[in-house]
Length: 368
Image (cartoon, rainbow, N blue to C red; front, side, top):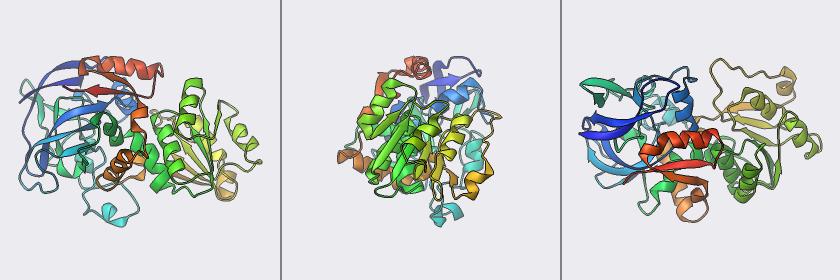
């Protein structure tokens, strides 16, 4: 079938919205009509050429939600008409990682997905007879996409696609990191570095876990105001003395839990240093640029601080995303508050511009 999609032709250049070909789903695959897709920093990161694993040409987009249009042979977990969130982090339920309960890193199709292909090592996207690679196994800057069954979370159809598409990446990364990766304790003190989509998600997750104090550090006054709206009890400007700002408000001990959500290596170091002496846990959520390194003073670890990463916030997509959708429908997650701009597919590059200027939190592409 012919579809319109936003194609990354060259790194560092605007995406080109054009017509491409999409083949139907094969065994274990699903055709999804995309209804909404967030414009995520990871898309911009890859488009810029900073991502060492990036490739082009390809159809970008990975924060999508839509409706199942057709299923391939053997598909059993979703049916035509089901509402789904598209996941860059699949969950097969059968690999050693899925069964462990300790990680969300499914290994079933990881190698093929990282290379831009579907599970059988081929692509469904093409142009002029030449195959085009899929982005993160999703490619949701498009009217339709074909994805593996194990990378789709079936969700309550009552939920707004504009809102729940954010659970495909940014919102879940922050919320799940506090809920299930760090497992923030009730009554604890939390410090979040960065008040973008992921950082605000961590604020929401910490609030749901019952944190008593939630400190948010961000140089933007507008974003600090948003952090207060989502549950921050104290907002700080951050910057070079960000660690001292946290220490001054925690009797010099640091926060029980810190979350880094900027992608800046120096800020990652601050998040480690601001974790509480003795047992503080730092969770790194941001994606650093090519060649950047995180430097940690060994005494920060010797004195009891712990550091962990949190891809997708540690969420198991097909298990946890439907739960988050239910919390949204119950009024416990203000996903609508994250949506700053609604744009069309033809305005995708404007979405990148808004992100570059920190205008709002998330732009969402709406498909007719």
